[in-house]
Amino acid sequence: MEPTVLRNQFASDNYAGICPEAWEAMAAANSGYATSYGDDPWTERACRLLRETFETDCEVFFVFTGTAANSLALASLCHSYHSIICHETSHVETDECGAAEFFSNGTKLLLVPGSDGKVDLAAVEHTVSKRADIHYPKPRVLSITQATELGTLYSPEELRATGDQARRLSLKLQMDGSRFANAVAALGVSPSELTWKAGVDLLCMGGAKNGMAMGEAVIFFNRDLAREFDYRCKQAGQLASKMRFLAAPWVGLLENGAWLRNAAHANRCARLLADRAVQLPGVRLLFPQQANAVFLEMPEPMIHGLRERGWRFYTFIGSGGARFMCSWESSEADVTALAADMASLAAPR
Ligand SMILES: *Cc1c(COP(=O)(O)O)cnc(C)c1O
Image (cartoon, rainbow, N blue to C red):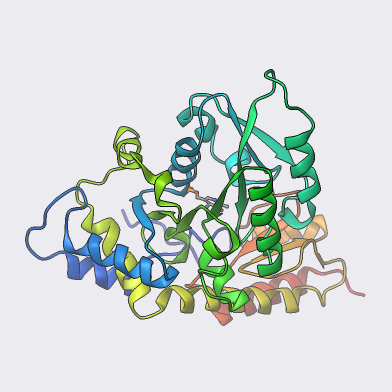
C-alpha cells in the first residue's frame, strides 16, 4: 500500500521532511565504520561548529527530542525540592507530559503569566520573593522559550533584562530554543548575544523543526552545570549508540548556514501569510507575527471550511485561535493557496 502523502501543511514545522543539507550530511556519515556513543568525527565536528556558532567553549550533548532536552536539562539544574519558574503556556508545562517533574524526581513547575508568551519579570520576582520559608519549593531555575510558543520573540534587551533578573534572584536561566534558529534569523543578532551574553546558562536548541529528521542539542554555556549530564542522558535512553547520525545533520545545517536560511525562509512565509490573512474580514492576528508562526482569530465557518478543504492546523495551542506554522519546506505557492482558500471562505465585507 502506498503511504498517504499529505499536501503541504501548516499544522507544525515538524510536519516537514528532512532538508537536503541534513539529508546529505547523514548520507555522507553513512560510509563505513565509526566509533559508537559519540566518540566519532561527526560528533566532534558538530560540537566544534556549535562552539564556533556561539563563540564560546560550550559543552554540547545531542538527544533525540525536545522533551528530552528540556526535561533532562532542567532536571540537571535542580534537586527534587527545587522549583522551576516558567510561563503558563510554556511547552515544558503544557506539552511534555510532566517530563521535567518526572526526570527531576518531583521538582515543581511554578507558572507565571506574561503577555505574548513571555514571562512577566515582576511576576517572576513575586514568585521568588513572596516566600522564603522551608515549606515552599525553593525557586532554582527560570525557563524561557525563544521563539515563544505564541510565535513571538524576546528582544535582545528583554533577554538581557531577563538574565539580569535571574541573576539577581539567584536563578539559573534555561532557554527552550526548539525554534532558536527562527529567533536568530528574525532578530539578526548573533547567537551569543541571544544566549550566554544575556545570561542564559543552558540552551536546548532545536534541530527537528529546523530541517532535521530528529535531534536537539543541549548546550551548557556554564560548563560546571554539565557535570555528569552524560549519565543523565544515558539513563534516560538518550545516548544514541550510532551517534554520528544524530550529529551529522548538525554539521550539514551549520557548516554552510542552512540553519539560518531555513529559518529565515520559514519566517518569510509566515510574514506573507500574516500579511494576506489580516486583510480578510473577521480575521485578525492574535499575537504579533515575529517568527515562523501565525496565530489567527477567524470565524468558525472559515476554520471549518479550511479543514474541509484538507488544511491542517492546530487550534489548541496558547489561548485558542488557529495556529499556522511555516517551515523550511513551506513555499510561497502553499501560502498563496492557503490564503486564497481563506479569502474564498471569508464573509463578504
Ligand atoms: C516542538 C517543541 C519542543 C520539542 O518537542 P518534542 O516533540 O519533544 O521534540 C520543545 N519546545 C517547544 C516550544 C516546541 O514547540
